[in-house]
Amino acid sequence: MTKPNEYLTIGETARRSGVATSTLRFYESRGLINSQRGSGNQRRYHRSMLRRISLVRVAQSLGLSLKEVGHAFETLPDKRTPTKKDWEKLSTKWRDRLDERIAKLQKLRENLTGCVGCGCLSLKRCALYNAGDRAAAFGSGPRYLLGDAPD
Image 1 (spheres, rainbow, N blue to C red):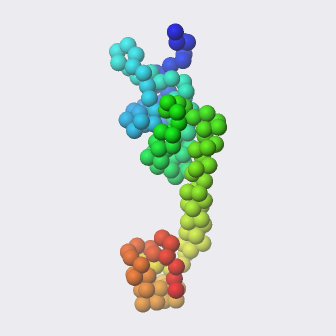
Image 2 (cartoon, one colour):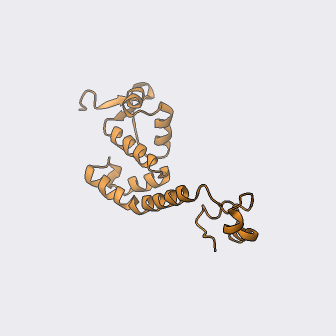
Image 3 (cartoon, helix red, strand yellow):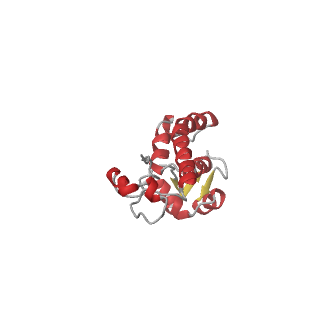
């Protein structure tokens, strides 16, 4: 027998988690959360889904894709809601990716006001950093901000 309030309506789950009901349905379609169907075929979310939704939101705020979150959740036995220990393990796997993003953002911040290697050659500094549009050999776009180094 289920306890009263063990399951929440989609509206209650949306209010508690801080996401729209459409987002809950989207997460469910991606397999990130699941619901039971009650009378009238209405979605009912187990309270433990609040934790899964919160972890999805945290992961997204760190720049992780829903696909990455889904892969992480698939590693859990019986697709259960992550425990504190599960979350520590999952988040540790993402640490290298986050460190890489931090390094890219720091480089972007440091080089944003200079030549970005786009080939426009409109800044005086571009003549020094991208003489003759050498960055074009690396490909299109802002090559220096994308990780290519000026000679």
